[in-house]
Length: 122
Image (cartoon, rainbow, N blue to C red; front, side, top):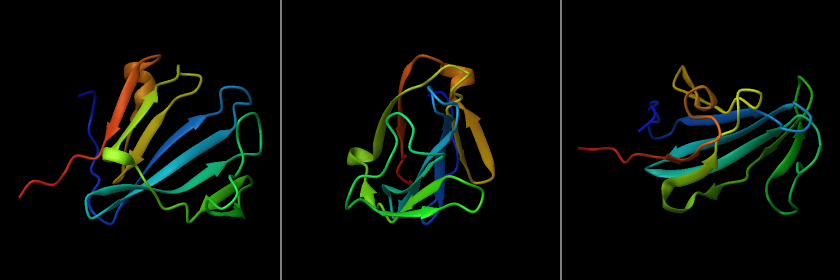
């Protein structure tokens, strides 16, 4: 295990990074819905290389600070586990939630990892 953040039921956690081509901000945000990891929204700084909305997958909304949020995605993450190849510090994959953050790029750059929702224990 590389690290751990609180991710209680009903709360959100976001994976943020800088786009590897444009350097603009990107984010995927997940909610813990009673022990199920659900992608709820994504942020895009623009429609750069590889970015954009998928028809029928959420609603596109302008962000007050620029860029766009795709909200209402509501996509269950199979097995509560998201595979990710962590980018270098220029990309700076960072996981944040519960008032804390963890720079994955700082501790595991260029490494495949799995982000996993750990089930609550009684």
